[in-house]
Length: 602
Image (cartoon, rainbow, N blue to C red; front, side, top):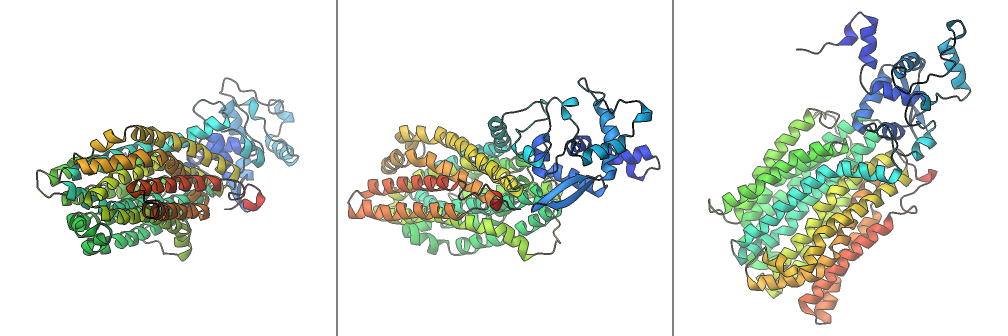
């Protein structure tokens, strides 16, 4: 049955309900009557998703109940005369509540009461309605009070203390992506096991391709994807839905260009590129795998992760995770089917990746184009350099960071290559577990990018820093739960991946040293994602450079000059990871993330 449009009816009650009948409208007007004017204050007081809030405020502005005006470098929402006309309706609504106590001037005899004149006069003198008369908890009455007030949730009608409320917000956004990360981790742990079943040389070929496969995922999901999330979150935080939709279209264009950067060299010239890292034998073993993985899988992987980032920017983390989880669940059984029963060998894993990511991209595209992010991108949107710059200013720096992180693994692999294929395969197992910290931290980090971006968009840098540190602590706990058992039981971990004694010995040695530093990598990655939301990427770049300098330069010092061999190289890798986490942590402070008026940005 078609939906009836009340706005087209002749009845004035029906036309009024077209404006006021939506469930958030009266609550938004309640906050406006209490003096709330800032987007972030509305969001904090009501516990409403930012994409929904943006749409509802825009509707109230469009219908003339609120004015959206520049104020203090941002925009504020003020009641119009038409909006004040809704005050009797608001009071009538409160009279139905069990704790309603309308003010005495409202219950005065009709001859002595002109509600609109009284309300206007009292408002002009700075009076605001007392929300304690109508609500279980008081609403903030000024922007500054709203910024400092603890978050009130509509679920319980009460007040949450600020730290638990912050944790709750982060966990609510992080939980779906963490579930996705757990699914991805399980799939990525099965892949080297399947590669090891093909033999040591196949495992070495897989290890040589590994840094590039990791870079593909990091750039499309966390790096450029983080730039997309940050840009869209800040646009929605400022109440600019149309700009958010245009940014989504520009993000898809960037995704196509990013896919080409991987597909052209690694699908056409895999032997040449891989041979520079792992030698001719490992390159030959991994060439077909690389051709399928990047030739057929790079574009759908970029599109899948970019579309998921668009949804996360709109606050739809659960919806973003739901669309990608299916692909990672299907990947291991399909890879096994292609590799073993159908006899494709290692190349079957590359084809399985391409097929599953293509399916995920189709699902995600349908969701986004149906308005799943709270807005609908228009593919014919004119391309503007300013919007590309909004995404790339964060995304390119983050991509450089991801490249540096994987370059460290590539250069360490190249240094280890002269020890033979077993050494390359053994370090590949350690590197895989090391980089599993990224999807685990990404579960929390994706929430930090969105929440920090909104806080920065609203000019609340102090809250942005608090969110970053809270999320960093959560990421430290999540990654420690995986890394510490691996560090305590490195031999059992290595044995789970390979039966080759030589590979197992080297993997055990690497894990017994490097795994202790992995929790630091987790907190560093979480704060890196937070820095993306803040648009403060200088220190994360320095962290990445310090990591590669210690991993490669320290490896040359300890392994070659001091003669400690592979042990010295693995110690250098651990020191590089530790330095990365420490430098990222040092950056989250008022001197870098400003807290005063000078640091307020749109």
